[in-house]
Amino acid sequence: MLKFILWLFSIMPLRLNHFIGSMIGYYLYLSNSKTKQVVNKNIAACFPDLSEPDKQKLIQKSLIETGKGLSESGFIWLKCFNDNLKYIVKTTGLEQLKSDKPIILLVPHFGCWEITGRVLSINTPVTFLYKPLKNAKQEAMLIKNRQKQGLSMATADKKGVIKLQRALNKKQLIGILPDQDPGEEGSIVAPLFNINARSMTLLVRLARKNNAKVLLTWAKRLPKGQGFELNLKPVNILSENGDIQQDVALMNKTIEDLVKTQPEQYLWSYKRFKSVIDYNA
Image (cartoon, rainbow, N blue to C red; front, side, top):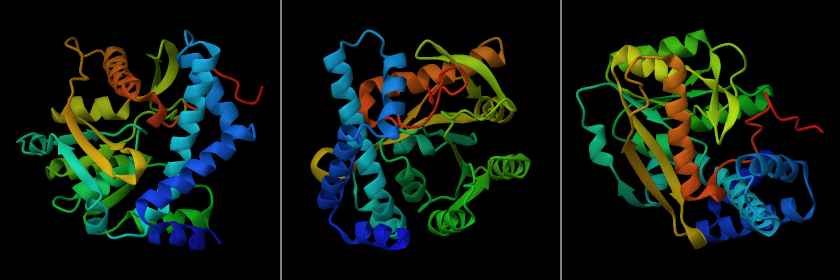
């Protein structure tokens, strides 16, 4: 059934795909779904100064974008990489990929993050870190649709870290989505939207160890199914004194600044602050 739904979304024009995704988002908002409850808690915590009407407006917009993210997954996964590229209608910063240094892509859960590695791997190998799914069938489907052509996936464990390091040694691109709660191992507590959140250290450790260039990478979703805008921006996330705590704080601030540009396109449905927020209350 899931395969059929993804296939159905893949054959739709993007404008229709996003329209249906919007309807899914409206349903999530009007039904007071669990997804809405998580979004509500995250937005309330990160934007405490919003008035109640403005908060509800942002929650609704966020869920609409979440719905689009769900519907476009089939559209992205089941098309070839060159077809994906056709929907990148504007690019900024591609020249930043020309560097003598190893490059790490810092890819927050913002906009259509799935499309970033796919289109960039058309011209150069890219290895992306990911967290395996618990469901074996879904995991197999995910790998089948993600790991193609020049895009390789590395599991979020020791073997995956070794794979990332080997890619860096070959001057290949690696991508990490660091705005997740990785658990106690490999994390420290650092501020994000003034919340002390458990945060990944891997990206900053790899950047410092390899003297790598870090590019903030995101694909902004354009309105009315017009496509996506791919951006790569060099960022400095390494503190002068080499303190890991300050490094991660700089990384989180970089993510926060991007999210603030268009907060509805961030994945607020993820339990990012589960170390400090009780999402079941």
